[in-house]
Image (cartoon, rainbow, N blue to C red; front, top):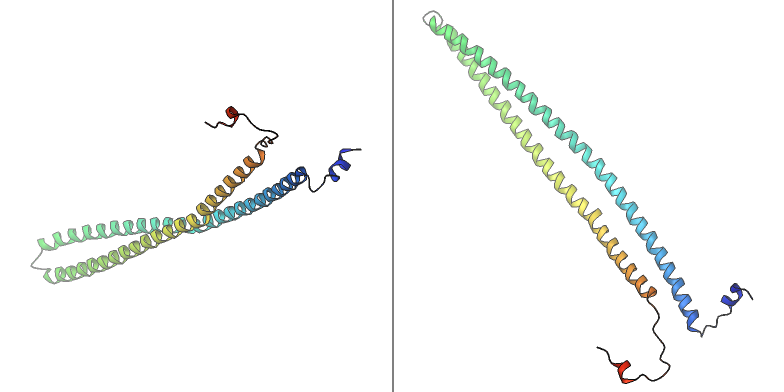
Length: 192
């Protein structure tokens, strides 16, 4: 007879039959665990992709903020140049003070309005930068929490599952214990 017919003739009372059943169930469990691991990895990859999609707009905002700061610096230089030019005018006007007292008063009023306007613009821009930095910090915190809950925790679960599978395989791969067929001597029974 061939081996196929011998395998089908195993008696259900035979321990070999139950060992084969346990091995088959073990392979089925391993296959299910591998599918579950593949699903978890697929979810982790999707999570990483979504995270990249969320970080890209954040980087664009940071770049935009840098451009705004550069624009504010250019405006500051322009204001400084205007103030410098105005101080030159005041020096000339003071030399001719008697003739141009009215002109000086008008220039001083314009200078005050310009400084007030510049201070208001600077205050608004500082508030904008502060809000942007606060929003950026909040989004980074949310992203960190998201990564921890969607990537790190599933990775720990996968590691625990794999450790359990490994222990299970070690149990199935261990040699079978000797059968007790007779009495042992005192030396053989000593455990030490």
